[in-house]
Amino acid sequence: MSTHRIFGTAFAKVYPLYVQKAERKNRTKEEVDQIICWLTGYDSSGLQRQIELENDFQTFFAQAPAMHPNSKLIKGVVCGVRVEEVDDPLMQKIRHLDKLVDELAKGKVMGKILRE
Image 1 (cartoon, rainbow, N blue to C red):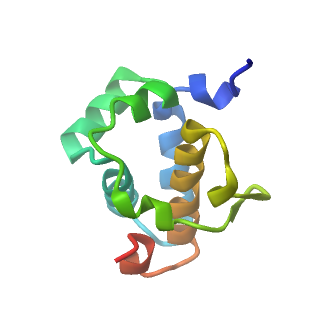
Image 2: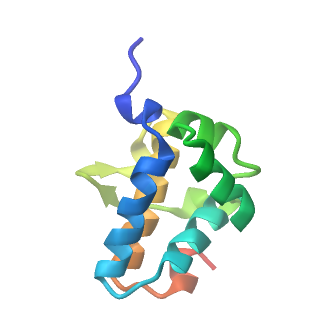
């Protein structure tokens, strides 16, 4: 069974792209960090450590303290794929993160993004 190449991509290489996407829409790096920490259970120092270690997505999510229980409420389409229908658990986590950053960039209120 082959794995998707994003699994081996360093989270630290994609993270600045998330921040750039948000900042282009007048959102902040802090908001991106808040979303990532909400989803994964990392605190800000844990997130920074993952970036410094340049861990790949597989390791980033494997070492995540705890995926938020409300992450199952994340629904919608990313890159033409419905996130709730993704079979591979790791790919679904990556798509959840992509969807949350998309929602931030589209101007959604943080409370709705964090499924409060």
